Length: 288
Image (cartoon, rainbow, N blue to C red; front, top):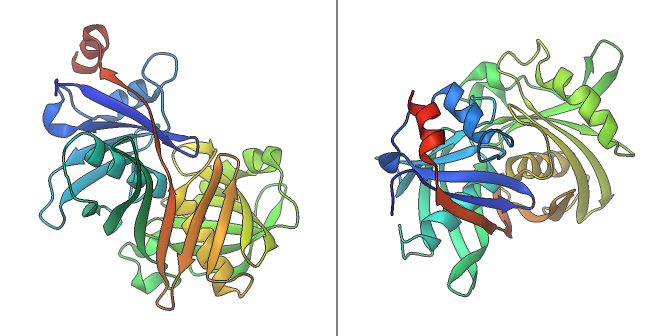
């Protein structure tokens, strides 16, 4: 495999570039992350997944947002990363562990197509509702049905950590224009000093919830595994759905199960878009 090799894949339209830290000739600085993720001047993506070493799991993973910040966990990112490891010969195992800033998770390839991983299950860890149980306490203010005041709007919010922090707003109707207008205000509200992921959610049935997503550090996105996990946990916590349910997003659907210990199990498709090597001209900008 050549240096500066990359793969671009998506999980329900949420796309990531995957690279091996040991096979890159540049630093993953904020400037470089922004450039690579830029759709006009770089490869273009919702983030970068970087393979690194780990003394806690089979593989280590850094999740880099397009604004240059680093995320603790990403459900779609984890499935994309697992596909990369399996498809490109880093492992022949169908089940392996991945170390993230949000904790160690187990990934399992449960369906293949022409020797490539297609359907992947990820055990996302436990949903946490109490701030004292979260490693960084300021990440998760405790709130269920608490009113959050914005400049021209107020929302009843529910917070949960699934390795990263989430703010869920339950609504009767969903509007893409509304979450695009207010998502950033919620993400950057003073109540959340480290910012927060935002979801607007509508219960369709005990087995189906529709959601729209504003992702911390990325903005509007078609799908998110950690956001789906967070919404599922809140729905079960509030008794609005069954423990096995489907989360429907603009990019597609994920299967979620919340067990009695609040462990989150997520299953969904991943697809590779392209692979290649960063050009020397782009590398000159990244290195220089």
